[in-house]
Amino acid sequence: MPNDATAQPAALLQTRALTKEFRGFRALSDVSLSVAEGTVHALVGPRGAGKSTVLNLLTGFLAPTSGRILFRGEDIAGWQPEQIARLGIARPLRITSLVDQLGVVEHIELALARDPRLLLLDEPTAGMGREDVDRMITLVSQAAVGRAVVLVDHNMRVVRSLADTVTVLQAGRVLAEGSYDQVRHDERVIAAYLGQG
Ligand SMILES: Nc1ncnc2c1ncn2[C@@H]1O[C@H](COP(=O)(O)OP(=O)(O)OP(=O)(O)O)[C@@H](O)[C@H]1O
Image 1 (spheres, rainbow, N blue to C red):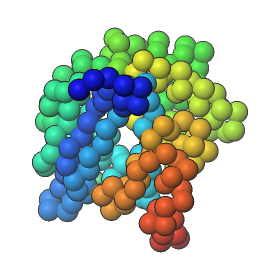
Image 2 (cartoon, helix red, strand yellow; image 1 turned 135 degrees about the horizontal axis):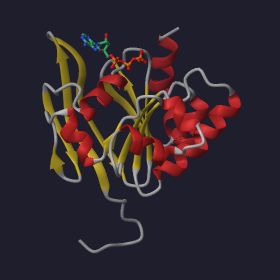
Image 3 (cartoon, rainbow, N blue to C red; image 1 turned 30 degrees about the vertical axis):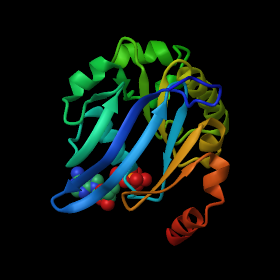
Image 4 (cartoon, protein in one colour; image 1 turned 120 degrees about the vertical axis):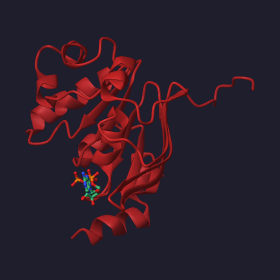
């Protein structure tokens, strides 16, 4: 197919019908995501929606019950965490140190992978004050350049500032996907959050 100016950037990571059951309980059902290089892809949703389960499947900490995880086109579903880390999928353990003077890349080199291509950030701004949140937003946007970031964060200011794409999960399923402005006006999304009380 010929390239044109409207072509989507290449997907670094895709999941296809990703499903995870815990002793018969379906925590995740048929979740298909596409994360393009150079972008921040946020996963949001009410408590128990399955966000952490997605991250745990992407790192290999959990194995999927079914479905595929394609990283640069290679199916890595069920791979061991060390193999996945060697591919350049990094989930920094101490997110707060991202804010330190070391900077994102050096910190991640210390933690995990020499040349991380995909960063998985699980609530990087949890417990932070406004100034540190602002610094984190800057660092994450810098870190996404030439890589990709999957971000879980309950702070909607962070999601709005950073996310190129937002996927809303509810009860293990994709409820909505689009830009922040698209999903925030989606009636199903509003209802899902209201239902949380
Ligand atoms: N190891 C496990 N064994 C059994 N059930 C689990 C396990 N891990 C997660 N679950 C269940 O799977 C569902 C999704 O959980 P998950 O932690 O992925 O949600 P989440 O969206 O990250 O929630 P939160 O915003 O509260 O962190 C929940 O119902 C949770 O209780």
